[in-house]
Amino acid sequence: MSDPDDTAGAKPASTATLGKRLWRDWLLRRPGLVILALILSAITAAAAASYAGVIAWTFDKLNSGAADFFPLAPLAVIGLATIRGGSLYLQTVQTNRLALNVMQDLQNAMFAKLVRADFARLQSEGTGSLVSRFTNDITLLRETIVRLTNNLMRDVLTVIITIGIMLSLDWMLTLLILVVYPIAAWPVIRIGQRLRKTSSQAQSQMGEVTSQLEESFSGARMIKTYGLEGYESERARKSFFERLRFLLKITENKARVDPILEVVGGLAFAGLVAFAGWRMLEGETSLGNIIGVLTGIGVISPAIRALGTLNAVVQEGFAVLDRIFTILDTDETVTAALDAPALTVDRGAVELDAVSFAYPDGSVALSDITMKAKPGAKIALVGPSGSGKSTILNLLPRLYDARSGTIRIDGSETRSVSLSSLRQAMALVSQDVTLFDDTVRANIGFGDLEADEAAIIAAAKAADAHDFIMALPDGYDSPVGPRGSNLSGGQRQRLSIARAILKDAPILLLDEATSALDTESEQRVQTALERLSQGRTSLVIAHRLSTVRDADWIYVMDQGRIVEQGKHDALVAQDGLYARLCRMQFGD
Figure 1 (tube, rainbow, N blue to C red):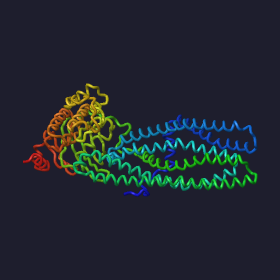
Figure 2: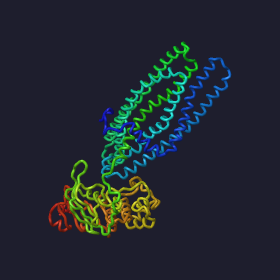
Figure 3: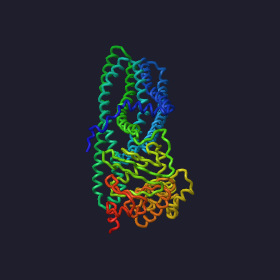
């Protein structure tokens, strides 16, 4: 269990650095909104500050016994209130519009960066943590930017203009105030620094909670059948308690700001009253000036207090902003040169030459793999779990890059061609079918976003999916549900095959496409896969060896190495690993 006081991760960027970048790169993208917000903030601040001057003038008139001021003073106050109220409304709307537009820009930039991020990075960071960036983090940052744009400009201008008026009324009283108030700045800044650190940890922990909740709800079937409700409840309780610890720490830090400002404000006011009384008795200032300065304190005190609490909000929000900028600044490692040529696939020959690969944690997945797939051939990869079969399929479209060795397609090295053309040349059908919460038509259409209705239906028919699609309530317009939950496993797989058929890629990657299906569904899917494979180079991973008996060549893998290769009958005759796997599945 982590301590909220501990420092987590790398040293964060300074508040000044983050603020400058937010202003330069994001707020100034919309100069019209910024200028209008500044003008409205200035009007609001000037109207508030003018109260001190009007009140000073009013009481000087009262003290002198003049009566001609009476109709003007109430009208002046009413006029200032009307101007401030109208400008405050317009300023709030305008600054919120600016802040929300900036939030949208940041969300778009962050999603565009993550959706193009390295596959290894997406795999290492949990889905819940990534989703938390767009929900919890963004909500907190939105509050910070709204407060910054709504309060910072207005309150700073209010303080500056009001102090200017106070100096004109009685510069000595005003200087006394200016000496006392900064005493509160140091503890407020220290509180903000602690809050920044704690908030950063709290947001990271919230990502972990989101991941845990996603696991618990998506795994409801397993949890119920294994009777794990109590275990999961206890696990969630510990996570929520940890969340509570962080939030209480944040609350405690925030709660310290107002009392500090209250005490300092009280001391300043007491000193001011004593000093003002002495100056008035000495005849060095007027009653109007004293009351005007006191009114100025009444104007700037809420503004200063708001700026003090704003520092806490900023530190909390900038911890999130630092996380977002870290995402935006992280470079991809799997890249291609900007001028890389497009891959042209004429035949679909695939070759791996002395390829080795290790994961970031140092675990070796492949060692010196050399294999070839002739154009149009069906190549099977078999072996125990963890032998490196799926890693090979991940290296072909450069989801990862090999540590050493070369991968070629029709003689072109995969690292020397553009990523988009390389991936366009391949279609993937795996046991983990990815369907989006959209219609059947849309999920097939992802294979070719330009495809028309006729092409989508033709692909569905080729995948033996048309009949069951037409039996759905809305046919091709039927929603598949989250992750395809409205469909059976076999139906989801056939939609995946239809999508691959629509893509019409020359190289086909099949990763245990039938392993999770019943016998009838497997037969239907296998028939659809045979249609899909015609005329294409296919690399097939299969635990059910019956599906690869007819392969043109079989590579047998174990512990990241190729230990056998050949056709089915020859491998059985060798009486090695492949033969043992066959006996385990088919018997003697």
